[in-house]
Image (cartoon, rainbow, N blue to C red; front, side):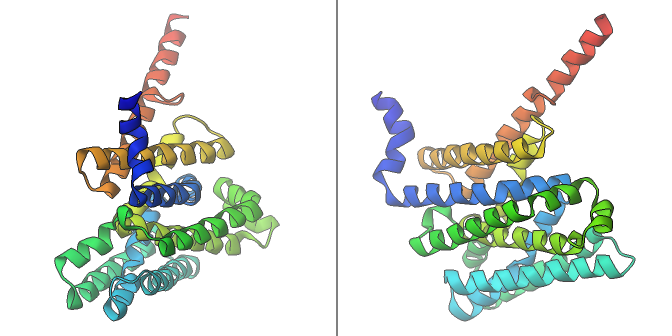
Length: 291
C-alpha cells in the first residue's frame, strides 16, 4: 500500500503545483475533448492544429508589451484566433477556396508573424515557453481563466448540441431547414479558439491541440454515437492527464509532452483493441469466412 500511495497519490497530495496542474489539465479535458470530437466528425482535425498556431501572434503581442503575463497573452491569443477563424471562414464562404486551404494560409502567416514577434524581444527560452507551455506553473489566475472557458464551452454545447450534431451529419440540410447553419459554424469555431487559448496556458500553442484531438480520435474506435464518444473522449483525456503528470513527476520529464504521449498510447491501443479497431475487425472477418 505504501508503494501505491507513493506512486499514485503522494505527488498530488504533497505538492501544490501538482494539484494545480491536475485541476487545470482535467478542466481542459472536460472542455476541449468534446470540441475535438466535433472537429473530427467534421473532418476538420487539422483545422484545430492550424488554429492553435493562429493564436500565436496575439499571445506574442501580449508577451511583447507585458512579458509572460497570463491575462494580456490570453486576450491577445483570443483576438488573434477569432480574427483567423472568422477570416478563414469568410474566405471559404464567399470565395471558391475551401476552408482547409484558407485556414492553412491564415495559420502559416500567423505562425510566421508570431515567431518573429517573440524573437524581437525574447530569447529562445521565451519562445519555447510560448510554444510548449508549462502545466506545472499554473497559478490560481490561470485556473480561474480555464474554468471560465470550460463553463462557457459546456453551456454552449448544451444549447447548440442538436445543431452541432446536425451540421456534422449534413450541413446543407441544416442550412436548408434552419437559420442556425452559418451562425453555429462560427460559434463552433469560437469555441475551438477559446479552448485552444485555455490549453495555451498549460500546454502551449503546439501541444494544446493534442489534448483536444487525441482522446477524440481514440474514442472513435470504441463507439459510433456522438454522446458516448464525447464522454469517452473526456475520460481518456482525464486518464491521459493523470498518467502524464505522474510520468512527468517520477521520470523527470516535461509535463506537457508526457500528457500528450499518454494520450497517444491510448490512441494506438484503441486502434488495436477498440470495438472498431484492427483486431476486432479481423476477428469478425475471420468468423464470416469460416461461417
